Picture 1 (cartoon, one colour):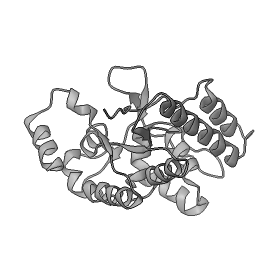
Picture 2: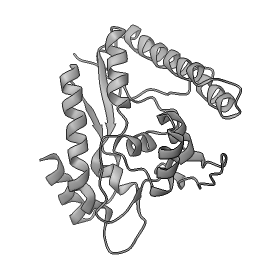
Picture 3: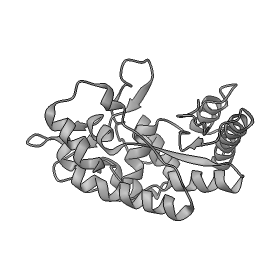
Picture 4: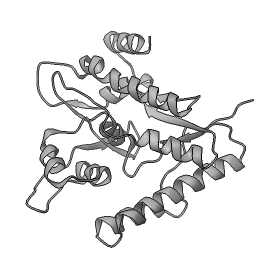
Length: 231
């Protein structure tokens, strides 16, 4: 029997991630130490699951902030107000991610954070994606591929986990009138297909797509979007 796990807590057994992020935000920890703290958590989690007899061990379930925001970076769904920050500061992905989640007020910039809301009926939160009519998407962050390759190098039978494209759109908000965000599925799917192709090329035999919005009472149009997307 093949065993697998849907995901694993990412904060660390002693809240190491929270402490490392707060030190980094305060300027008391260099970025390479932040990344090392994250790597230690990932590898400890993978080893614990392997030792427990889990056959397919999830990867990309780790996040510095939340997995919806990670998906916005993966698909290049970065609000326009951050574009100048990217171009002028050439921020690494980790700083752009934190800027989108927390805002950015320094070096002459004063950029508001993206909206935060509750993850369904839990006390966990996520950063709400912002969508505009005819929005284009492109592969911006290859975090999922990097973490799969990291797990593979360390000898773990890893299973990449992705937030599904339909739930990703439904969890977001339209930032202008005259369209519904699900209309963007045709622009979004090529990015997902590109990611799946890269993971397949890297040797991922199993990939998990989470569509938590299937737990809701969906309209007929939303149901049809799911059917067409996965077909």
